[in-house]
Image (cartoon, rainbow, N blue to C red; front, side):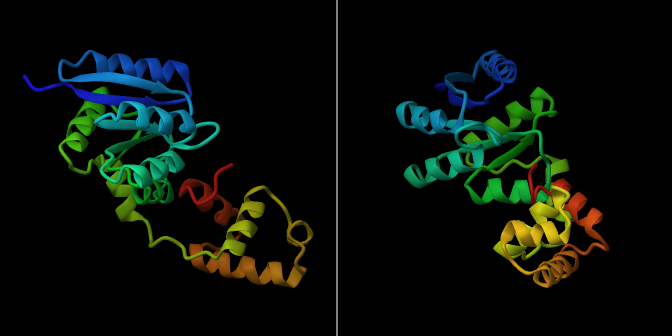
Length: 207
């Protein structure tokens, strides 16, 4: 029998980390070699253990999973990584794949799916569950928002009015209105409420 797949699990919630580790360690062809509680630890432990596959939670303190994946990929171009997250927005998925993840799993997946993903990624294949593939396929192309428009959108999501947004970003109120008009157009929505909803659902802005 070939050597078991060596896995790094990075997840800041202890219960989730213990759960994933237990599922993995029950498989005859897998073993967890390291556990990290944040992205910074994940990068350091990856360096130390050089696992076959890294499971990275996207939301972790110190450094998130996407940043950790990018850092690992910069140092180890052949790294095989899987995103684990509670978020399934198309922008989240795009960011994770752009950072070098080969699979994207939401945490409600059945453990068979987790194990299938680990084996697929270890074999050098991409693994996107149907729900994730559908989220990517169904969405309109990613909105081409400028850095300033993203700032304005974030403040819309936080419930600020145009005047407050102008004050916060030290720009004129009519400039804010122009940004808002562009944002609504690019997101394909009618008003600020729809813009905020779309921004959160698609993972463009995180609260």
